Length: 149
Image (cartoon, rainbow, N blue to C red; front, side, top):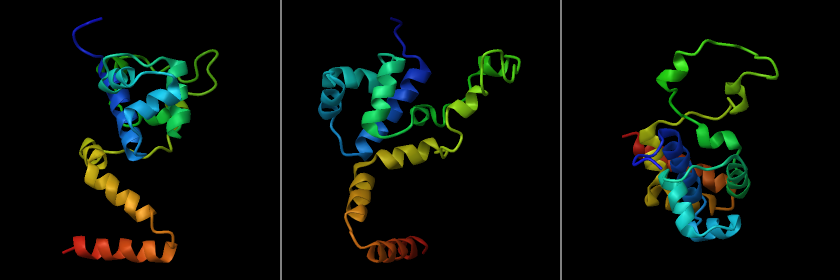
């Protein structure tokens, strides 16, 4: 294994950590759900170990996201831009981009950092802990009005 991690593996690992954290799930709990140790989960999240296809599918199921979630906002590599566009190549039903679920929202790296903060996670959990949707809406309106100043 090389001394540096592949940028794609690091990106996928960051997305695993983001989703796990947003769900309030520990590395140990995620590992148990996958039949892994928390150390293996750490290696995936840091991009030190590559996540295989079947494991990525298992992660998507446990974390309740489409597989494409792990690749959202992945910058296109320079080597990909140099490749000719083959469109629908023989044996391919559709271009690769659509396989990654184009409906996924794009999130800036700064936004990802904000989403991963403990304060943000606690706020989101508390917000969704409000059972009455009307009350939740009024809390959202209040917070928006306070931030608009």
